[in-house]
Length: 195
Image (cartoon, rainbow, N blue to C red; front, side, top):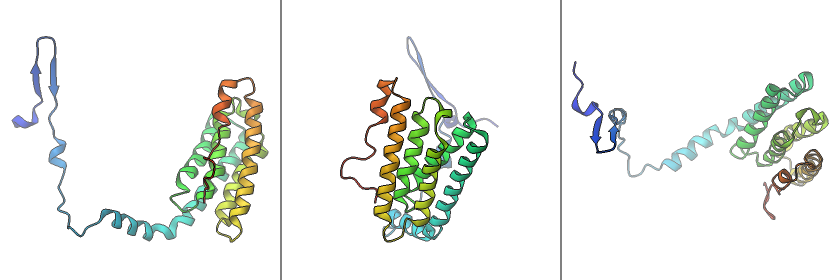
């Protein structure tokens, strides 16, 4: 069966070049929805999010368990490319999901762990106790973050964790001054709060 004329690419020839425009088969696959004037896609999205919100704590707990498992593999096998990547990805996913899932305070230790992994020149030199502190902070905030006094405790915990991480990164990168400025820049603008 011969292809319809619309399905063939068009070719425009010029003195020194040609322009080939491919056929637009995807246009046939697109269906147009006739939306009701009362339809509000943002409201629909918010309703869907509200229906799912009951699952957020379960999802966040699962992310915390995945981070814990990645940490335990590092403890067993040491830092290798695979174990480093698994730990980084678990922390990075938590950092990205925490706000959406209603756990904004978890972002801070997860981001700090990412910084630690990302900016340490020799992974084998990262003290396991520092990794433990990050993972334990993430898990504690997931578990206890909704308690009445949590904000102050979380602020103290994450502030101290940032100090210890900065000190370690400064020591590990002391011979790389061009890296230190980026590494030690503040995580948040003054006055910003993760809550």
